[in-house]
Length: 314
Image 1 (cartoon, one colour):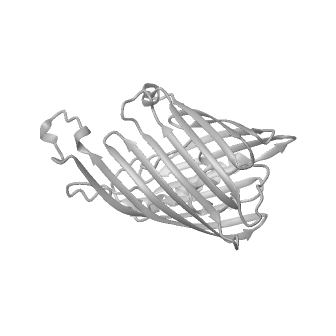
Image 2 (tube, rainbow, N blue to C red; image 1 turned 135 degrees about the vertical axis):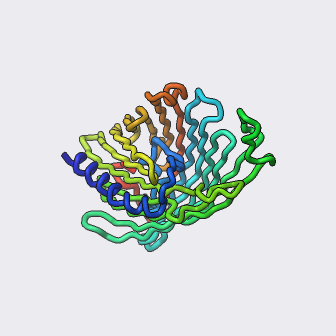
Image 3 (cartoon, rainbow, N blue to C red; image 1 turned 180 degrees about the horizontal axis):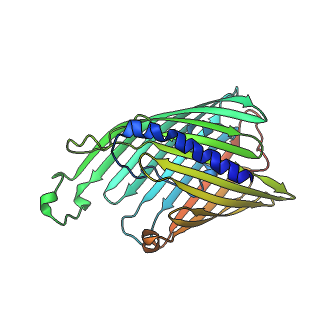
């Protein structure tokens, strides 16, 4: 019943934002542009700037995703994120460096997040802002044109630098979290050549929700992630993760219109964690792609006398 209520509230948020999408996009059609991760629940800074500092410690996470290994030049994503609270604990800051490559296109970014937290009911409510730069580059020498008359660019490379402005809300308590991340509010231009003015960043919305239940030495953590991009169909990730003896996470999730994913994470100690995820699509491109692999390494360092929150669902 609780998950149904959370799911309904999340989709109502997406529906409420639909008029906003139409207003800022007009009639253009976009697909999902931002990189996606199966292990997003362990690094929500990637989808929501309001997450910055919420772990109450210096947190460093590296992630690498190799998508659709059966397809040449398929997406490959790497990221490094650092976040921490300031000494007054009301403010959190974060920084991210990402590289997302698919075929001849590479998108790299440097992003900075700021979050301000206030007590709210039994937890904290965080308001976040993120700004940064994206570099969209194309290697035209890798393009294979069926009709040479379609040749779009005679040079070898071209690039376009554009900014981004993101906003987020994040509520979290000891065993529950809910977030709302809205990315690319400025809809920066991504065109790298020519006079096409419609090639812009699409507004993206992410709504993650998680609830933890502790039974003895076991933590059960069902999760939901609602994702939407302007003028594109929304998708839903439904998952359940289990933490065994405060040291080993095991999880499975189902992604609408795609397939399923498995994850595992081992907490080496209170500071170091290593995670792996595998996903397999059941649609045409997922079957042809033969699965995707994702690796995560995280390191936490206590600051200002902070201690790890238990149960560890973040």
